[in-house]
Amino acid sequence: MHLVPPVSRDRIISQFPKWYTPEACLQFKEHFHAQVRTACQWSTGTLGLKISKVVVVGDLYVGKTSLINRFCKDNFDRDYKATIGVDFEIERFEIIGVPYNLQIWDTAGQEKFKCIASAYYRGAEVIITVFDLADIRTLDHTKQWLEDALKENEPDSSFVFLVGTKKDLVSDAVCERTELDAIRFANEMQAEYWSVSAKTGENVKQFFSRVAALAFEQSVIKELENSAGHMAQIGTGNLIKLEKNVMEIPEGNTQISLGCC
Amino acid sequence: MEQGREEEEEELEEDDGGPERALEKSPFQLTAEDVYDISSVVGRDLLQLQLSAGPPLPAALARLQFRIVRVLEMLEALVSESSLAEEQLRLERDSLRRELEELRAAGARGGTGQLSLGPDKMVIDLADPNRPRFTLQELRDVLQERNQLKAQLLVVQEELQCYKSGIISQRRDQTEELEKEATGSSSGTSRDSEEKTIIKRLFSFKHGKGASSRT
Ligand SMILES: Nc1nc2c(ncn2[C@@H]2O[C@H](COP(=O)(O)OP(=O)(O)OP(=O)(O)O)[C@@H](O)[C@H]2O)c(=O)[nH]1
Ligand SMILES: [Mg+2]
Image (cartoon, each protein chain N blue to C red):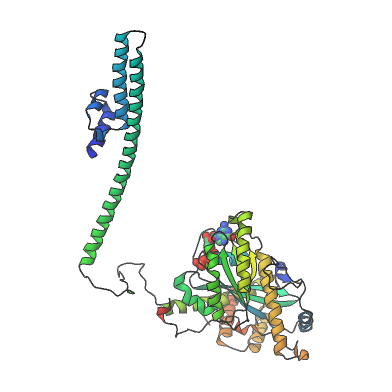
C-alpha cells in the first residue's frame, strides 16, 4: 500500500449529502445506514482502501470533462478539447472515517471513439449520464447512452445519475422547464437528477459528494452481505479490498473488430 | 451588367456629360444615382415652365409636377431593388465559379488513377501529414498505457505530497524501511514493483544521487 496524504477537508463526509430534487432521487435517508456506521467504526485503522468505479457518458460537447475537472481540479476551460477515447481521475474521500476513492472514468462522446470508450463501461458502480441544459437534443440521447452502459454491467448493480450541465447558460425559467422533462427521463431511467454548472461550480461538489456517499454505502452493504452475517469478520480486513485493482483496465479486447466504429 | 457598373464608376469619378447623360442610358442599366440625375433635369425643365407661365401657378402644371415626382420615386424604388438583386446574383455567380474551379482541379487530380470504391471505402492521401495512420488497436494500446502511467503518476504525486508536508521523515533509512515494508506487504504484481521503481528514482533524485540512474 502506498502512502497517502490526508484527505482534504472538503472531501470528508460525515453526514449523508442531500438530493437535488425529491422528484428524481435515489434515496431519501438523511443518515448512513446504522449497520454501515457500525461496520465502519469497527474497522477503523485496519482497513485497506475502498474504491468505486464511476463512468461518465453522454454526447460530445455536453461538458463531461469540464464537470470532472471542476470537481477534481477546481478549474474550468472555455475551449473545447474533445476527449480521445477515455480519461480518468481518482478522487479521495473520507466517509464516516473510512478512506474511500472514486475512480472517475471520463469517456469520449464522439461517435468514432465509442467502441474504445465502451470497453471501460464494465464494473461501474455508478453511471453518470450527462446532457447539456442548453441543448435539449442531448437529453434525448441519454437513454441510449445509459442503455449502452448498462449492457456491460450486471443488472441492478449500478447507481444511475442524470446530470444537466451548463446551468449558467440558461435562464431560471428555461432551466425549470427543461428540468421537468429531465425529471421524467430520470424516473424512466431510474436515475437521480441534478442540474449543475462546471463554469460557476454550482452544485458540482454537492453532486459528487452525493455520488460518493451512495456508492460508498452500497459497497459497504455489499461487503456485509457477502460476509454472510459474519459480523465478527468485519475489521479483519475482510471488509475493504486493497487497491490492487485500482487500475482495472480492460484487457486488449481483441474480439472487438475495427468494424464496430 | 459589367458595362453598367463601369459607366457608373466613371460618372462618379469625373461626372462628364452632366446629369442629362442618365436619360440616354439603357433602362436596364439605370442606377439610383441616374434617377436622381433625371430628377434634377426634369425639375429644371419644370421650373422653366413655371417661370414662363408666370404666377399664379396653373393647376394642371402643379398636378403634373406632383405626378412626375411620384413616378420618379417609383422608378427609384424599382432601380434600387434590381441593383440589390443584381449584387446577389453576382455573388452567387462568383461562388459558383469558384466551386466549379475546385471541382475541375479535383477532377484533374483524380483523373489519373480512377478506381471505383465500395460504399464503405475511402481514399487516403499518402502525402497528407494528417492522414489517418493508426489502427484502432494501436489507439487502444496507447490509451491503456497512458492510463497506467497516469495512475502511477498519481501515486507518486501523493507520496511526494506526503514528504513535502513532512508527514514522513525525509531521512533515507526510514524511507527505505517504508519501501521494504510496502513491497513486503503488497501482492508483488509487476505493477506494484513498477510503482516502486518510480518512487525510488524520485528519491534518489531528491537525495542528489542523480535521477538518470535507471535501476
Ligand atoms: N458556459 C458553460 N460552458 C461549459 C460548461 N461545461 C462545459 N462547457 C463548455 O462546453 C464545451 C465542451 O465541454 P467538454 O467538457 O469538453 O465536453 P465533453 O462532454 O467532455 O466532450 P467530449 O470529450 O467530446 O465527449 C467546452 O467548450 C466547455 O468550456 C458549463 O457549465 N458552462
Ligand atoms: Mg470530454
